[in-house]
Length: 251
Image 1 (cartoon, rainbow, N blue to C red):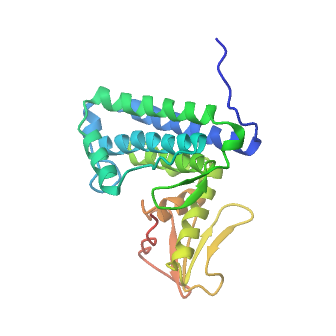
Image 2 (image 1 turned 90 degrees about the vertical axis):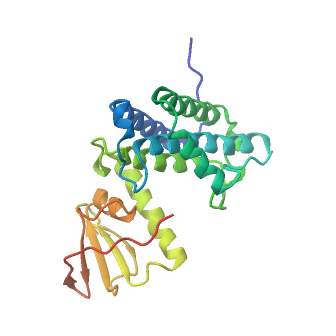
């Protein structure tokens, strides 16, 4: 049997879909390395076990699939009925038997992949609404999922690090986060500098910034997502700080 191909032929979208699928496979690998008992252990997210992370990633695939159905049919289908229902869903999913939790991840990932594959090429531009209320083209769902699977693979605390995430994904992640800070006005006086590559990347208030946080791309992404400061350094008004301040809130 010949596998069906994506209906889109847009090369940028196909590359984005590849990154999302690679991230899904990476998350699956880190999940499958965990024993059933290890699923009960803590994740890197405060208050969440590895079960919560797995349930969240599974239900996130279903939620994004609803947006693709919306784009395909024109019938409004929200990601979640409410924030409360989303939270309840995750908490419930975390109580599932281990095999059911694993099936949730596997089946939801396949479902989303099929929805993406079968979406007509001209429907990728149809507008849908994210859980945060942003109106975006359906093509944005690919990045939404990419961000989820790669970062939450790290959150499983099973040996994955931000250094395992492709540089293109990390750079877009940092751009998105710093862009959100700028939109909210929470980055006043802050400059984020990515070192170790040419040209160096800078985000934020520019050379007059009081607070400068610097580090390699993986370290900056880890800090910006609120997952640790070990790989970055900071200065305030040119003086080195012993403790790197926490990043502004992301989402």
